[in-house]
Amino acid sequence: MCLAIPSKVIAIKDNVALLETLGVQREASLDLMGESVKVGDYVLLHIGYVMSKIDEKEALESIELYQEMIAKMNETHE
Image 1 (cartoon, helix red, strand yellow):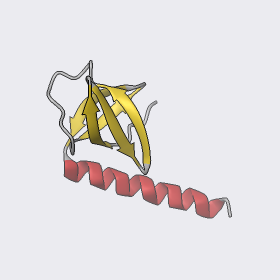
Image 2 (cartoon, one colour):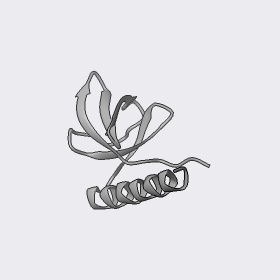
Image 3 (cartoon, rainbow, N blue to C red):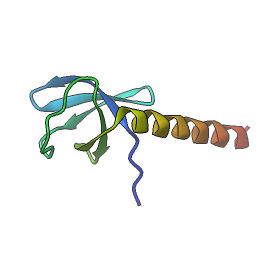
Image 4 (cartoon, rainbow, N blue to C red):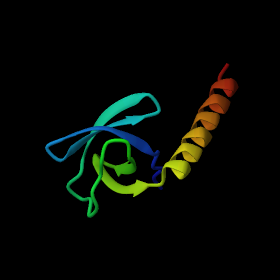
């Protein structure tokens, strides 16, 4: 089972997107995307490849849920 965290595209160069995911930046290939991706889009990635675009509202709701889960896990480890 894989969890895909929505990531925001912050730059694109040579078919590689620079993504921001919960404050962490990483690069991912756009080679498998059938539709165009632009800076500001939210995407889902898997093993270094952008797999699909996601609606901004849905992405932000998902990110909020992940942040709540992370906060809850941090509480249990204190």
